[in-house]
Every structure is written in C-alpha cells, then in structure tokens.
Length: 117
Length: 111
Image (cartoon, rainbow over all chains, first blue to last red; front, side, top):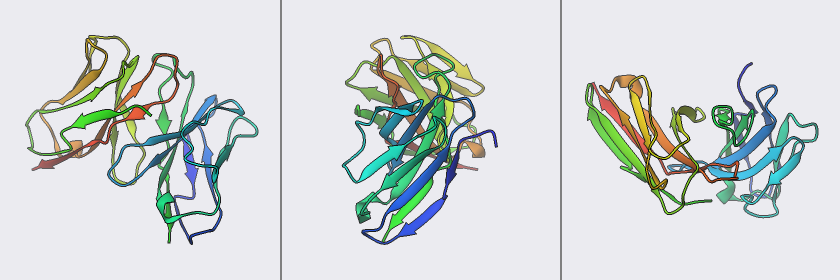
C-alpha cells in the first residue's frame, strides 16, 4: 500500500510479557517516528529515526522500551516486561524530508492498540 | 515534549455552523500544524503553517500562525456531518524534527 502500515492492529498481552510492534513506512521516507497515544490525549513522542540511527530517543519512558530500524526502512518497537500503564495506541509516522516545509510533513499509520491485562 | 494548551476540549455544533478552536504554548514554534483523527485511524494532516502571521485555507478550513509564534487557531466554516472527529494542533520547534501535540478538540455535529 501507499501509506504507513502498522502491525498488529490490536495486541492483548499479560503483564510482564514481551511485545513487538512493527511499522512499515512510506517507501522512500527517510524519517520514522514512534508516538504513543493514551485515551483522550494527543500523541506523545517516543523516538525518531533518521535512516538506521535513532536521532532522538528522548521520549522513551524507560529502559523497557526500545526501537530498531536496522535497514532504514521497517522499524520495530519493543516493550519488555509490559505493565498495565503501557496500554495505549502506538502510532508510527514517516516523513520525506524532516524539518523542511511542504516535504517534512508526518504521515501517520493507523496505530497498534496495545492492551496489557 | 512541549506543553500545548488546546481549547475547547469538546464542542457540539449544528450543521452549517462555523467552528473555531485554538492552541497556545509557552514555547515559540517554527511550524504549526493541524491534524484530524477519526476513530481507529491515525491523525491526518489538514493544514501546515510555516510563517508567523500566515493565514492558510484548505477548502472550508482556515488556520493562522499567530504573530507571537506561540499560538494558532483553526476555523471550520459551514460544518457538515463528516467534520465529526478529534482535531489536534501540533507544534515543531526550530531545529527539531519531532512534533508536540495538544490534547485535542472533539467535534460532534448535530444534523
């Protein structure tokens, strides 16, 4: 497809389990972002990749959260020892030329809804 | 992230009415953006503003980048049922690639 693709769309897990969420950005977009959206809130920044490297991971809440983008395209967000407070929608976005007017805009996927029981 | 204060939190409007919402921040932003999110979907960009004082339209939508660079507003004219959804403002600092989002304005249209 032409848009940002995220899988799974829904994930239910038990407290303490490990979870991986996948993002496939728009082809050719060098920048990739992960955001987390809790109910009734706006998206909150987690991490930003430029190519393969994490250029800004200042939004990751703690060391249980980790993300990779080994080939500069698909990214995986990994959450260890999940807690009930991790329940949220995890949104991925990509952009063509970050920081540039008209071509730096973020395009979002539909999100992965994580529920930790 | 930066703190953005978006108001109102929610609104019920009559079809055909004009809608206005705004966003303020204590930070000076380089870019202001407005997104709309439908249930089960990701946010979709409506309007992007790159210059202080800029007024930009997209169909029935009009948005302005405040002169102080600390605020923005979005107007929707002649609202229709498909305008229902959550509208988010977002700001981007100079030399930064991430966006900070407001908490959203939920719009419900009465037919």
